Image 1 (cartoon, rainbow, N blue to C red):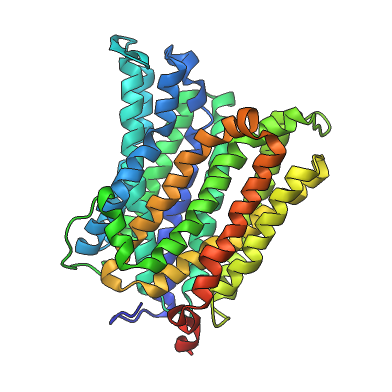
Image 2 (image 1 turned 90 degrees about the horizontal axis):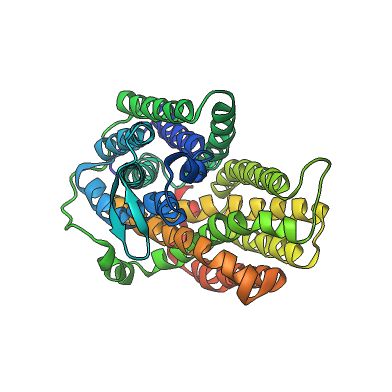
Length: 430
């Protein structure tokens, strides 16, 4: 990806840190609210189905907004859409507070969903706002980082960006849980909104206008196949993103506590829930640290794709370890292996996408990449519980996860290694 603008190391650092701050504080704000959201059925007296809709509304909104958001960013640049996205995210937690104080009036009944209450509707709309905002934030962050960097330093800053994204959410989980326990649910939501506003303010002050003014037609989710036909390499990278999101945000997060309970794993006073939280925390920290490190490493080698091979192998080994060695020690080791693999694969794939994408298509291709990841995030939780409880059992489910990761070697790594546009990317920078 070539641009006519050249940014000094100091300018790149300032812009990138502003983007990373937005991503991190947005992730913290998401995490702050999340421990309280599953308790809403008791607080608002809503059905379990309504609660599931509230929890998934942001992902559904983002899934449909990714491609239009990418088109807008290609047209007007990343600055304004990203700032709007950050402030839109900030509306959501304050909407939660409104929902807490909304009279529990029943609006009607929907077949299959049951009664729809006014507080439930407020929360659904707030989550939809969050999803719309997050589409602009992530794609704007990718477009900005990619545009101001070059092949020789892109991996480093993409790694920092993904590291901030990885660490923000678990930080928020801790803050949100503590605030809810020592203060109230409303205090946790208020803190989430303030953090999101801080992210928007930082971006407003620092972010420059970059790569605006492309003459592009509006893109919609249904036009995704057409976009992919024109950029087949994006489909390969997107499949890798789908796999990572599907396995981590779906299978691991949905089944780990049940796996620990099923095998009777204990650690001191911790049982299934505590163990799963601790183990996932280790995985997230490993992922974040690896992301930062491998981003820099990818700038030093002739082909970033080389990093994806050990990354996918590490993830494969982690899932096989969970499948065949159901002990607490093996579970910690497995999550470290999976965290290392995901932390190496994600920034490499995102940097390759930036290397290969022209500046006036960064928004749309970033949107495509995000759509495939969100499909994985949406499908994972739907498939995970039936897979372990009904269809396959724990061992075969995790073996199939390992097989899916292995398929990335054939579908992602090998084709990209054979692609001359990828293999010469870092070398051209020299």
